[in-house]
Image (cartoon, rainbow, N blue to C red; front, side, top):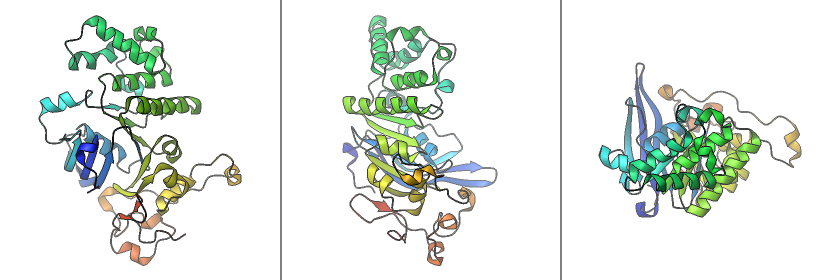
Length: 328
């Protein structure tokens, strides 16, 4: 349990496990994850590709494929989305919680103007609004994300990558949700546009008071925007804490490797190639005994292969899953 009252959290994941059914047998993608997001808080979820980030995100609005089995509780605004009826789930999507998908070009309908796409969830959840009122809301949303209201008449292919991502954010805010999930929202954007999108997200959280869960493999991006950062490896959380602490003073060897992979401005060592991490993430179907990170860990000792280390608080708000935490 994460110790946070469900009423005070817009998202509360409790011991969530996600297993895929495959021809080769069960594939455990997420294993016993606890995570909370409070109103007005930005929580980052970091880790390499394949660590379970997007799978976990899929459970928040019950978007996981039919081949996935979800155990544990996924509470969004106090409702367990994995057990509520389809009618309640439909009412919760967009209006209670929304998602910004990774690829805006693939998420937007190429044959519909963006104004119509932003208006669709508004009409669905607020059918009492007149067409004119919906149109005004669409224009306000576009201006809120830094686009001209006239852009509502544009098609997705007429916008740049950054503009399309702003449209996705406008759609996510269309029905005034209390929780927004952003799955790699700056992927494939250049550095300047990426910074603009991150600043936009920070401003929206501050001004609207929504809870934001943002997923990225780039720890430096999360350190810039998040209040807290959660690091996943092989389907488990291995460390979490305040964003600046996790980035500047990582405690788990895997978090240290992630942090060391990104150069810091002003650091003399940054002129050289960033430190790498040998090996590949383990196959979820064939996890090594004990700590899943042990085969790649520079601090591994024989005891690391005996049992999987539990997530233990080693400081205020700093749970870490490593028996050698504090050793360098």
